Image (spheres, rainbow, N blue to C red):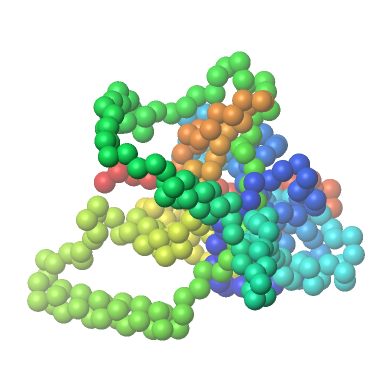
Length: 334
């Protein structure tokens, strides 16, 4: 029912989720919230399927478990649509609808006398007020510069620290602060594609010429010495802010380093396919909440996480969920 696409869909963090926004909770895309500790939920129905289909991705927040594939879990849940014919159109455009109202931030438009509609955000209003106060402030010829105290914080220690959850919080509800995920296609214009192909062909031709002149020549690598990381970084740099890459149909993951991909479904022994990839840019938004205490970020780190699912999405009537495969890679320092 969902329209198959070979294009990559990029996920971005959207508005925070409030209690008043939890309609059709299993049919939305989000990060955080319960159950413990849900990292991400992706509603991903398949083409010509009678099922709704959602992936629930969990990760252990114990620092000793970070960057370990066995410490991550992906649960696939499916349930039959109540009315197949009525749901056809809705499921066909599921991924596009992730983008609906992405620019609606609750800002009221201002209607000018000439009929033009403008939007003025609260942030702009605050800046205007501050600017006006500065312009109207009484001028003082004597400017006193206060002494600046140097911070005593060890920055390197902060970067290396791994936050543990206090032991007295282990019995509390532990979850990441929830946000909606909006989505957009990763687009490249034909001009850009053609230019990229020409550059690649020229590069390969030059490599062949150099190798013929010098048999001992080694193909050049980026400064840090790893072509996988360079491809990873240069690709996501084109669309800043992306936290998720989705492409179940002929999609290719971005590896941080070479590694064998899982290829067999543990349930039906069928083929596994790459479905989505979680990027480390998500880490900034992972703010842990324990009971009523807000512990902020720093409770999960990883390089990237790749989710592989059964090509046939194997399912029988009595199933409640299926475990899918996650491959986690740690960012290495070269």
